[in-house]
Image 1 (tube, rainbow, N blue to C red):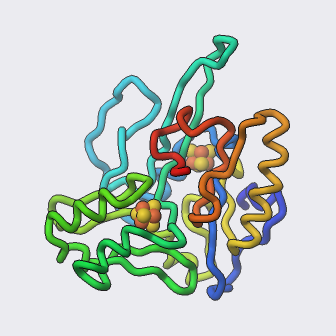
Image 2 (image 1 turned 90 degrees about the horizontal axis):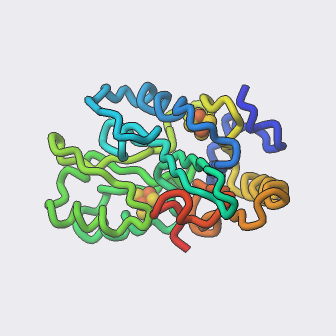
Length: 236
Ligand code: SF4
Ligand code: SF4
């Protein structure tokens, strides 16, 4: 059982009618990359050649075969102590997804918003976008998420595991995480839990905040300012 349930929210069981959210409490993340691998496994994505680049982060970026990447940032605090910050990066499933607005102008139906979960879904019709329109979708995303598959010409990203949700299960990354970093459920309930967690985390990290929580369904709890994670970690 996912230890994320230990801070109160009920796991989803067959209720498909409410918008869903995921809390990512980065203070619990150990960068084990279990979520990254589980995502590949569930989506049947092949291994790709990669190489170590001097950081724990591998592969170095999102790509059509890695819809989730655990980013890694190292810096010195004001006392000269090394701080490691982990950031399991994925689509935020924005409440008003600008990627969809841009795609709709060129190929309606290329990007959908699932009314049951709020998940933003890229469809096979993304392959019908012209190279310029596909690039416009990529450029519009404030979190640098969409990736173009050069073979299929389709755009790719996390789909919130809507197939699992429809079957009453949690997204694969949430199910796999051994530390309770991620919690999945109804949006209102997840927001309540996120704020509870924030109050606890703030006792140790006074600058902690919830990244763009009013605009996204994947809500990151960050212990420090966004520049100590990744340049697209938070928009505001
Ligand atoms: S994070 Fe980017 S790709 Fe995901 S829904 Fe928002 S705008 Fe679209
Ligand atoms: S499985 Fe959990 S602890 Fe491991 S990298 Fe992913 S979010 Fe972090």
